[in-house]
Image (cartoon, rainbow, N blue to C red):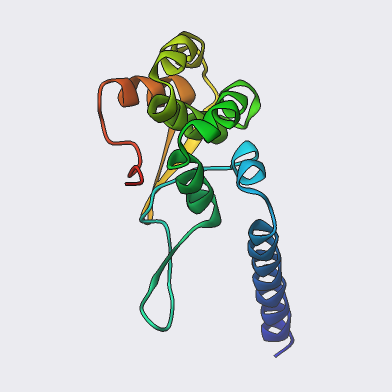
Amino acid sequence: MRGLAISLLVVGALVCAACSVSGQAKHQSPVDLLVRAEALDDSAVGEVTQAERAVRTARYEAFRQLYLGGNVSLSTAKRLVDSASPAGRIYGYLILRRVSPQDAVAAAPRLLLDHAQVDVRNGCIVNTSTVGELVLHIQKGYYVIQLPN
C-alpha cells in the first residue's frame, strides 16, 4: 500500500509540474516562447479537448502568429535566427523565408553549418536532426513542419 501511495505522489507531482509549465507558456509572449523553444512543433502536436476540438501547442500558435504577421515579424525573425535556441532558430528561419526571402538566403550559410540538435515533433512522432540538416531540407522543399496558411 505504501508503494502505491508513493507512486501516486510522484505521478501527482509530475502532473502538477506539467500543468505549471503549460500555465507559464500561456503567459509568455510569442517571442519568448520561440526564443526558448525546446522542440520544433508541427501543427499536429497538441491535444483534443472534451468537445473534440484540437488545441495546438502554445509554441506552434506563437510561430503561427509571427509567421502570418508579415513585415512586422521581420526583426523578430532575425533575432530568432541569431540568438534563439536551436528550435527557435528554425522557427525564425521559416518566418524569415516568408517575410524576407533575401534575408533568409543571407542567413542560410551560417545555419547550414549549425550542428545543434533539434527535436521535431510531428504528431506523436519525434525525430532529431541538426539545425543545418533541417535548413537543407527546408531549402529543398521537404516537409519539416506544417506551415500556417
